[in-house]
Length: 204
Image 1: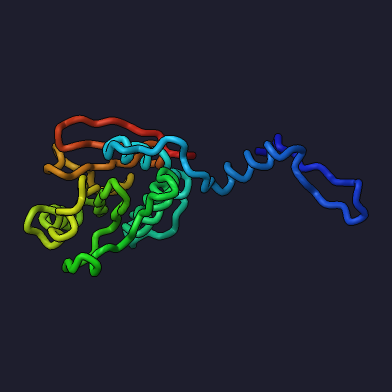
Image 2 (image 1 turned 90 degrees about the vertical axis):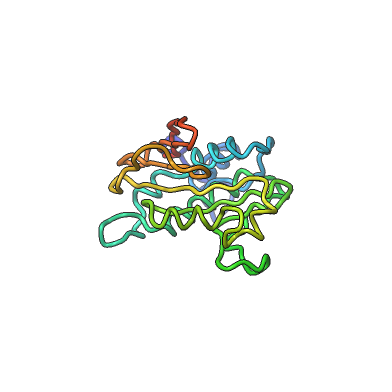
C-alpha cells in the first residue's frame, strides 16, 4: 500500500499527515484492519456460507500465528478465532455467531459456534482428527448435543488439518468436512462426505 502516500496539511499551524482522499484512506484501513460493514447479500445456503468463511480467513494470520503446540501445529483455538472473525464479517446486522453454546440448552458440553438467527446453524471444529468419532457422536440424534442440534437447520463437524498435520485418508464420515491447508496457508482444500472437493484461496 506504499503508493497511497500520506500528505502534509500545511493549512494549519499544527500540521498533520493525512491521506490524499477519503477513498484512499478507506481502502487502506479496510486492507489493514478489515471491515465491519454488513454485507449487502446475506447467505442463506449453509454450504455457500462455509465456502465464503474459508475464503475470508486470513492465511497470513494463520501462517504467522504463534499459538502452536510443541510439534509446531496450530492450536485449535487459533483456527476458532479466525473462523469466528471470518464468519461474523459475512452476517447481516441480525446475524450473531455465538461461541461455546451449551448451558442455555441444558446440554453436557459446549458446541463451538451457533449462528442463532433464522438460519440456526451449528458448527463444531476440531484439528488433526482429534477425537473425530466423539465429535460426530455428540452431534448425532440422541448425542450429547441433541437438545441443541434438534433446533438447528444444519450442523457440521469441520476437521481442520494444517500443513504439518497428518493428512486424512479417504472421505470424511457423514456430517463431517475435512479442511486441509497447504504449507503456506494460501489455499485450503475442502473435502465433503459425498466425495466432492474444492480448493479455496485464502486472504493474503
